Image (cartoon, rainbow, N blue to C red; front, side, top):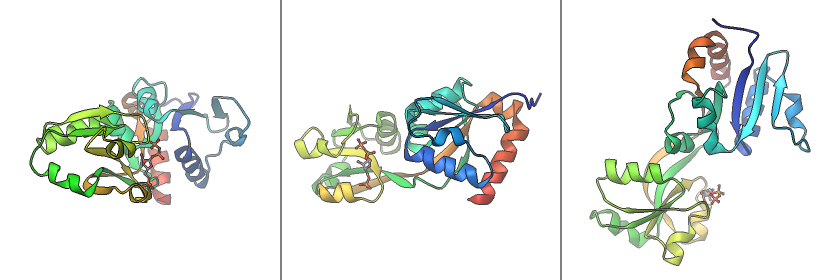
Length: 215
Ligand code: PRP
């Protein structure tokens, strides 16, 4: 029942990711002039011609909006997708926002990772850290959830290591920390609600096809 009168709703993670996504969408002719007004306090923007709606949300909330069908499509980092672990389809790697999820710390902490020691791990990503240490490394660790500036934790003695995103590596370098282990590569991904994928398959597949040609 592909219904062209229905709006296709997009949830975009606020910030750099959203600007890059909109720039990419422009390349395939999907524009949203309303959204470019930086002073606007509006939360939701429409393109009446294409029947597309866009809204900005906090990154970690994007997979939630998509799972419940409040958005048909979401664009968010792979880190957030893994951490939130929602039932959505991940359909496309948008190839921007590239970085890595790593275990980092002072170089000496490398030893602690070799012998299955009970160590403290600070992170904004407790689910990813737990999966890595418990299921992949079979190492029991104490995971401490923080909300930002994770690099502080080993410096002030809150934890032995951290699990965090490394992009250029300069935050680590400037704070005397190094990458000890790599967990996985990250980048922006497009996710789709499982029901929307069936009901709006024509429009969504066309969008995926058009985007792929630009990547
Ligand atoms: C992210 C990440 C690292 C830093 C990595 O933090 O958590 O701290 O960027 O980038 P780099 O390798 O290029 O230095 P963000 O700036 O998003 O803020 P946060 O520390 O508050 O999470």
